[in-house]
Image 1 (cartoon, rainbow, N blue to C red):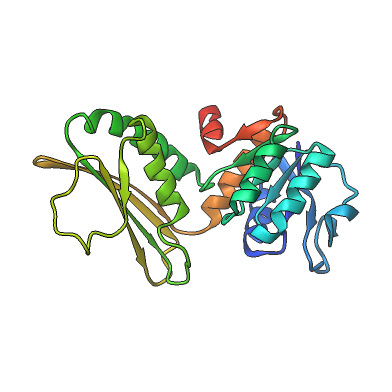
Image 2: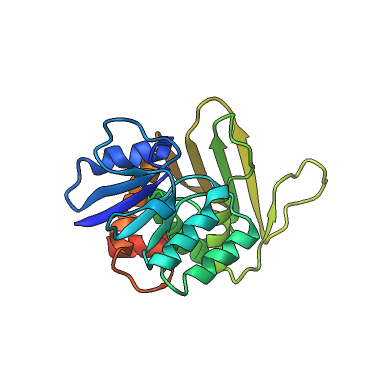
Length: 253
């Protein structure tokens, strides 16, 4: 049984993760950390990491960027593997994360969804074949109207997955409105749609002569990210120090 500490257990994603784990046999929530401690919580909730006094095998952090450095330091000090799900990390925090991964196992991905990470594998195979046949590549992502950044980190990760197998030879274009020219051959167009309550759609388009291949992932609730984080925690609990991502988890399923 994997014992997990959920950092930010009373936030939206914290609740999602705890609710999902309730019905699982391989993993249990041993403790949580949050600024609020509601009555009736079936596991101990601490208001600070320094107060944690429960045996744990792995940490899931779905909190805020401002808290990440403290979580990283705690994981390094206690030698507890960490699934870091928080987005919007600064370059300094990413460097900190890499430093900690030399002492303990740390897993971080731009998107925790198992489906998105499977899509990343599929588009690599498609890019290897179709780029040689002259197919153009575009990515369209759609999110709810409240999302602040554009394009999404996942869209950029998809583009990076394609460019990785193309030896980094493609450039990214986010806006074609100010130019009057034919599309360059080695270009990946990335477009963002913001509206309504769309949880997250990502579509990778390979457009060739007289044929189009579209590979798409749609998230209908944020539970998909929680499910991925839980699978990552089960995978990471007994791993040696190192920097892991969801591709490693997918490879074990």
